[in-house]
Length: 365
Ligand code: PMP
Image (cartoon, rainbow, N blue to C red; front, side):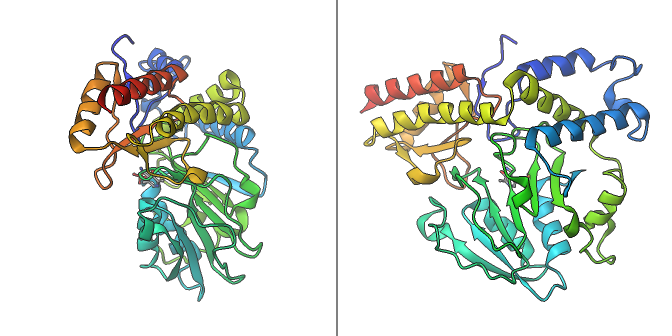
């Protein structure tokens, strides 16, 4: 573990060390199984117990009501960009409304357009995706197929502090990929909440879809089988082989959140404190660091900012590495710095970065 750095990667991202160590201890032989979890049939009792326990614990952690099902799928969050409109929009004669607050929302509406009528009810591109819609800004039709938003835009570092309001007749759909399990979310208020695992919930390859039961059966039988939610629901996420290793790791991360952290309220508080440490340095050095997001929607997961020049940016990244601060470079589409501080980033890592930022600004201003 000595060689591990403070890993600010946006995803795949840091996993709690204690979880990695448990996985390591069980890698070659899962106790009682006589084999690694990766070598077991997904239909055998041992794995079925693992997936059922993961779901039960996730239900406890997120207070998922009985009205909603949990599906463990593959295809990343990106496949949901298509599965959602394929099931809920295609042939509906309705329009789906999208709040586009960053790159992922833009990609999602692009895929949805192939399935049916869409409307970008909010499009933040005019201000380079630095904000969420102001309250009352967006008119949502009572008859919309659904209202779609991305709770945390990973690339721009723009986060909805609370979900947008939708009429009760309109299912609210949330791409929670990069803030899933970082704070409580009112599942009952949503039609679908989905997330790829590789930020806060495990390794890449697993996507968690939490879906209200009445939405499951809407897809047309002629869709490719994998795309139909009802197939996955009827087979309890075993319509085909689920990502077994991912589900196993997710189960351990959920237990870590329940038992070691003490639940999502505590996790949210820690995440807010970690983010505040970095935003305080940005605000204390306004001539040096330029935060990307407007103050009211700054992400607690991805802190995005820029420096006065490309030379200083390169020097910042280089010097940070000497403090074991790694993977800070912003997404290639926006540049600058992106410090991703998901659940598993220890407070110590954020303190180290905050101190480094203060010193770097003082030295180079
Ligand atoms: N949505 C968001 C908010 C994301 O951050 C990402 C991945 N970074 C995706 C969707 C796409 O996820 P995947 O690569 O698993 O398809």
